[in-house]
Length: 201
Image 1 (cartoon, rainbow, N blue to C red):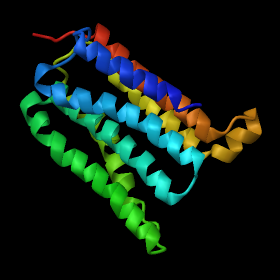
Image 2 (cartoon, helix red, strand yellow):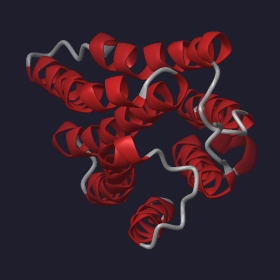
Image 3 (cartoon, one colour):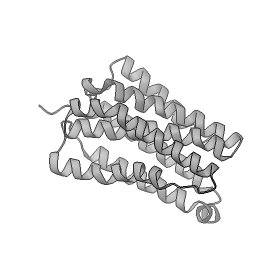
Image 4 (cartoon, rainbow, N blue to C red):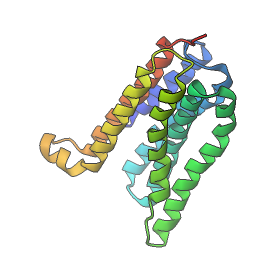
């Protein structure tokens, strides 16, 4: 059930794009916004599929969906901070890189190795680069605090994932499920930020 917020946020995001209700959108990055919100829908579906039949073969779809939204988010921050044209050119290569990291992990699992280093790099390196970009280059949109809030929420989601069993013992609610809710809140912050943030001339 904790995957439902992703479905709802993804669908609502696409509807808002269609109705031009996101004043913080940068037109050159239209495809990246579509990819981000589509990724949320895929996360909802992929997560549901995984929990119906937990295995590496179903987890791969969940992780692929995550990388679609994750890399799209990174591209969007590159666009608002450095250059929309550069970011637009990065969308396809970075989506490919993210998906490749999941495929590499899955193949390594089949070989009995389970190498998550590539996947981990794809997830954590952008989280280090984003604050650096905003610090050195600023943003073409108002309210960069929205992005920093999302980074904090992301860190909270990873904490919940790492301490899954401990959280269950503390509150009787699995850390994995808690991670879903925290991550969905991060997606909500991004969507809400697009409604209230404005381009800076």
